[in-house]
Amino acid sequence: MKQVLNWAMLFFTVSAFSQHALTFNSTVDFEPDETAIELQSNKLVSSYSFNKLIFEDVSYLLLGGSAPSEGLEAAFDESKSNIALSGIVTSNDWFILSVKGDLSATDEGIYFIDEQNGSKKAKIALNFYRPFWGRRSYDSPRTSVASQRAFYTIEKAKQYKIAALLKDYYYTTYLLEDAGIPVKHILNDELDQFCDDLLNNHKYLLDRTLIDRDSILLDTSYIVAKKLKGVPKNNAFKVTIETKDTTVDVPIAIYDDLTYDINKVISLYDKTVSAMDSISEKLVLEEHKIAQPYWNSKRLFYAGASPYYARETIKNVYKSNDTLDFAGQFTDTPGDLFGIEGQFGFFYQSKKGFLLPRIFFTRLTVNLGRGSNLGEFENRTYNFPARILDTISSGVVSTPQSKEGNYNKKGNEYNFGFLSELGLEAYYFPFERYGIFGQVGYSNINFDPGKGEDAELYSMRLGLLMNLKAKEKNFATLQLFADRSDLSKSPNGNDNNLLFGFKVGVPFNFKQKL
Image (cartoon, rainbow, N blue to C red; front, top):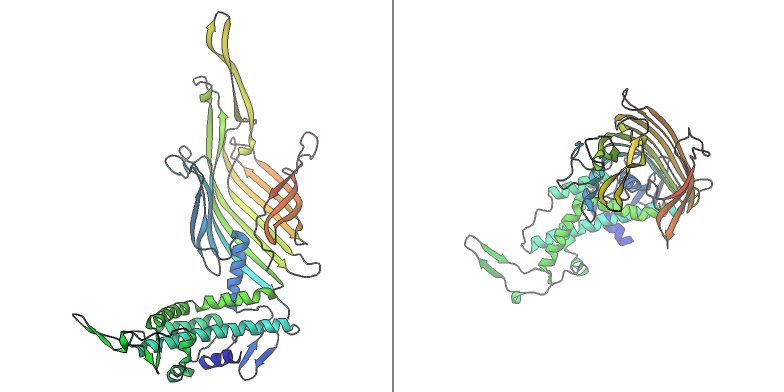
């Protein structure tokens, strides 16, 4: 540990979390005169890292991945007539823009807003999500030595990673310079950007005046430790290669009687420069890995907006027409729906606590858009007089004509109206595997005169939740529910508007571990 601290002090000075306001007055000096770590009660990691953590939380909650990559993915069925489209359009620490769709294709492709040649069924939505007020809790370092150790471990791990990376950078640069290999000057734009990233994202100030070239090159044990030793080639003679325009001296890499492999040094140099470009992300990974066991709970709010387009089709709608044969009087009627859905959600998860839920999720949804009177149509069987096929001596041979079709019992044709919907749902797990949930909804659709009958609907679903497990990994949640699709109807009698059933899955993703 002492060696780690020496390297840290050799290469830089640390201003740990110096730009954050403390929520209590407390400073822990783990190594007097060397490192002072200022504690924050609401963030075990740096602000930059914490923002990344909140982004991972909302990404997993809504999309099922903690670090989804940008780009679209398409999945096809065997006939390639149905396409499932999903992916991230763009994202950063403040928002996620994703797309999700289920589309059916014709032989000519996929058509939008085309009621004659378009797909029979489709839905595609562009989803915008914005997390805010994200919080995580852990035991106060004023009273918990475990939390104090967590601060110390995280801080020292970050310092060591920076120091080790700088050591590789300075050593490989000087060794290549010593061997005559072309390399950028040690003080360059890449090093400046490295220092800026440390200061802006992690509040570290690197003092480069402490780094001395001679003292570094005196430590030849680095070559042995990094396995850079090599065997002299060309019998230790310098070889001069002449080309048309220039003369190149192929160097022998010998420093203080210690031969090193130039190719290994070049490889380490390239790897080090690449790592310096992503130093902020590497420190984030280090913080997240070490801090994970110390979190006690997390909570976050998010807001979302999803403009969407949907395609629906009523099959076999009967329209009487004496000029057509029986089959020709049934047609498929497609329609285009579109609108925007907004949602506001809250998620909470706790590892321990009395009377606190282990998992709680709730969201409010609002949908405004173009709806239809599809719900007015019902299925029935149409029977028509038999069609004579042939006449034989024993009588008339005929075949009955019947077909399943859809009709509107109110006499309206398929039309569109303005749809407004409001929904509220909540899922509560007081225990690791068992919980309860509830959903209530309101729907209203208004039609122009003669286009359909206005409808208002209230619905409710209540039930139990059960996390099904395979070994130690949670893989599915089972809903057992009682459903009232229309609260204006009676749950018994002729209406019989009370159904019982089950469903696999919930509209959010979660892990058992924080």
